[in-house]
Image 1 (cartoon, one colour):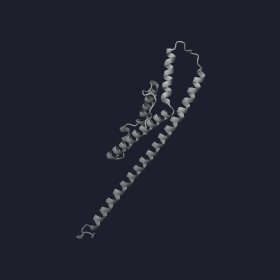
Image 2 (cartoon, one colour):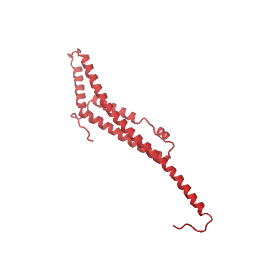
Image 3 (spheres, rainbow, N blue to C red):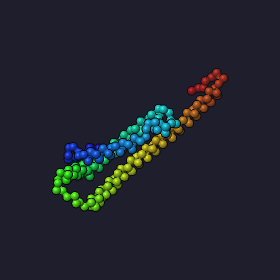
Image 4 (cartoon, rainbow, N blue to C red):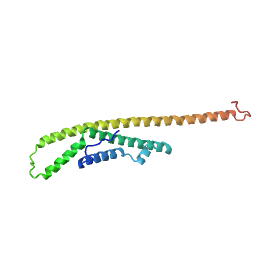
Length: 180
C-alpha cells in the first residue's frame, strides 16, 4: 500500500497527536496477550509446537497492526484529516492572537458538527474493528484446525507401534525373516 502524502510536509500538532493516539491504542489492544499467557493456553503442545505457534501469532499481530495503521493512514488521507486538522490548528492560533475575536460562537452548531463528525468516525472505526475481528476469527479457526490435525497424527503413531509389535511377535522364534 502506498503511504499517503500530505500537502504540508510536517504534520501539525493535532494531526501528530491523532496518529500517536491511534497507534498507541492499537498497540495496547494487539499486544494484550503475553508470551507466558500464550504458552499456558497451548500447554498441551510440545515446546517446539508452542514456539512455532507463538511465532505465527506474532506474525499475525504484526501484520494486523501494520494493516490497521495503513488503513487508518489511507482513511485519514482520503478524508483529508491532515489538512483539516492543520487548518483547525491555524484558526485556533489566529483566534488566540486576535484580541478582537468575539467569544460569541454558536456552541450548539459546533456541538452538532462535532457530534456528527464523531459518529462518522465511530462508524468507520467500527467497520475497521469488524474486519479485524473477522480476521481474528479466521485465524483462530485455522489454529483450531491445525491443533486438531496434530491430535490426529498422535493416534497414528500409536497404531504404527502396535503394528510393529505385532510383526515382531509373529516372527519371534522363527529363523526366517519375511520375504520382502
